Length: 142
Image 1 (cartoon, rainbow, N blue to C red):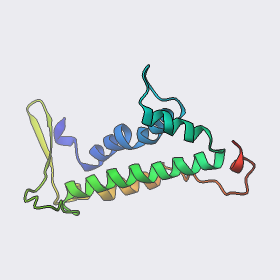
Image 2 (tube, helix red, strand yellow; image 1 turned 90 degrees about the vertical axis):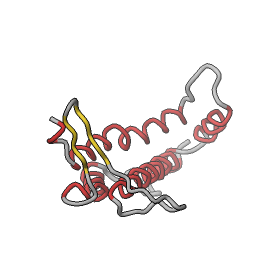
Image 3 (spheres, rainbow, N blue to C red; image 1 turned 60 degrees about the vertical axis):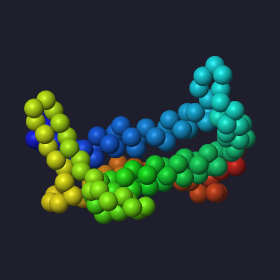
């Protein structure tokens, strides 16, 4: 089964497990910080978020989406070998998928070597824009 696990399937799994929930998790934390003894930083962020209007909240969601996109894209580019790790890091990262006795290397060479490109296509295909124009009725609502 792992022999069939290539770059597209790996990126799809990363999209579903990391990228897609990232923004929703942060937005949920801003709306209601978790825990009985809430961290003061999260309480302060919650107060700030609660004071924002609908348009500002949509803009924040869009900014968080860009942040998650950039982080996942950058990590995949490092795994591809397209973005070097600086500061004297002399090793080549390799991605090895294991399933029992089966191992599949998703290597920087070949079809699987463009994980960041696969991710970009997936995001463009599945993610709708989240920004609304300022002249909408919800733009300045608290």
